[in-house]
Image 1 (cartoon, rainbow, N blue to C red):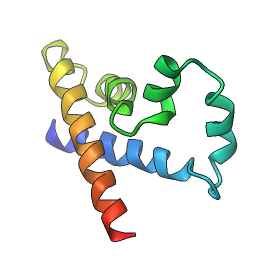
Image 2 (image 1 turned 180 degrees about the horizontal axis):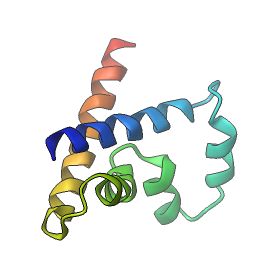
Image 3 (image 1 turned 30 degrees about the vertical axis):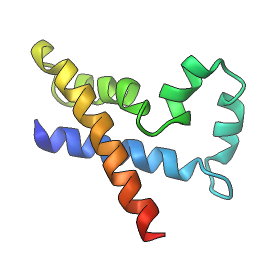
Image 4 (image 1 turned 90 degrees about the vertical axis):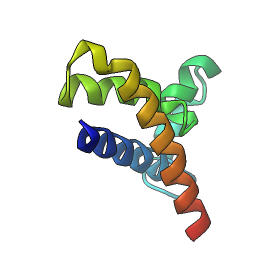
Length: 91
C-alpha cells in the first residue's frame, strides 16, 4: 500500500506542477479557477488539498480496501506537501 500512496502522490504533484504558469496544463488551471474555491482547491488549486480527491482516486484505482481510505488520503496529502516543498527548495 505504501508504494501506491507514493505513486499517487507523485502523480498528483506532477499534475499540479504541469498546470503552473508557462507549462502545458496551465489552460486547464485557468478554466478550473472559475469554480468555487472549495471545488477548485482539491481538484487542482492546492497541492495539499489535492490529496483528498486524487488520494481517493488513487485508492480506488490501486488499493480499494475500505478501511484504508482515510489513511490513504491523509498520507497522500502529507506526501504531496513534502514532495512539493522539496521541489520548491530545489528550484
